[in-house]
Length: 362
Ligand SMILES: O=C(O)C(=O)C[C@]1(C(=O)O)C=C[C@@H](O)C=C1
View (cartoon, rainbow, N blue to C red):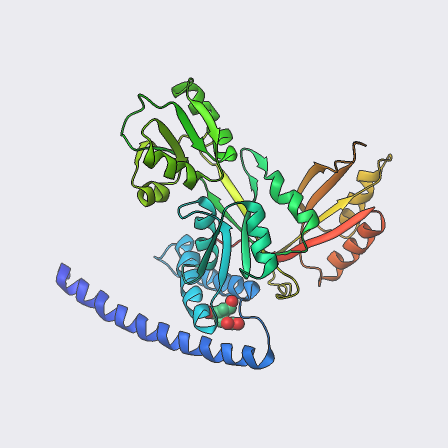
């Protein structure tokens, strides 16, 4: 048997690509029909639970050699393109172009979206609440630095609902106009990025001022204007602002990940239905009394509901009272979850469901 030549193999790839394109167009046609039905019903287009099920189903039946981790990004893009035929999806995130929040938004919704870059996390929440955007993408937790306090505080007051989550490996790079470390007097980046890189900064730029700015992309933009300033941002931001990566991967933790929540206005978008692999996020507060914490955890144990996260934030009452942010596995339409939440609510001074959504599929 003769091995095929490069041109022969490429001809075969071209033929398959034409078949794939024809199939994708048939899929897009079906999505358009689905869109018509939704328009008649007056129901929403974006269905995170359905998208999670599509990806889960394909991954579990994937015969390879395509790697399973390639399946989710490919189908997110396909569904993003199909979704955009049904209706535009406007997504707010902490901008400007080149931020990790933008990367998270594109990773979750795919690139066929209308981008709504915002100047601050507060503005992401406000734009989503005011209907300037359909969805907002906000950082909630970092594997090195812990919770993003500002996001959690806003969750307490804003009537927004979490409908999804996504997480991103965050590789921080030192960016500068000149390709050298000499002469850097200030490093401009988001406070979280400065904290996530403090070990490298202390070792290599101990005398440079660490100047917090509104986003890492803003730091990259400032670095592009002034050679005495360095920024800390992604390689995407480096090419966006035309600066050098002077030192790659300077974060303290090589496995540095940030988790983002996808939020929406519950009056315009219903909570996702159960996908089979779901998470429910809550915030509760309890009176400052013995056994209060036990009362929170007991209903979960009693009904076999797993808790995947527990964070506390001071309630700012001056009384050493706290809000607890809790993630439990499951969807409130499952009887065990429903009963556990009901019992939990009884023992809490404050109880709010922040959202229920499919667990991030990679
Ligand atoms: O199944 C639907 O409801 C669709 O609109 C189709 C589709 C898809 O492309 O598969 C697109 C958008 C939704 O978020 C979910 C899935």
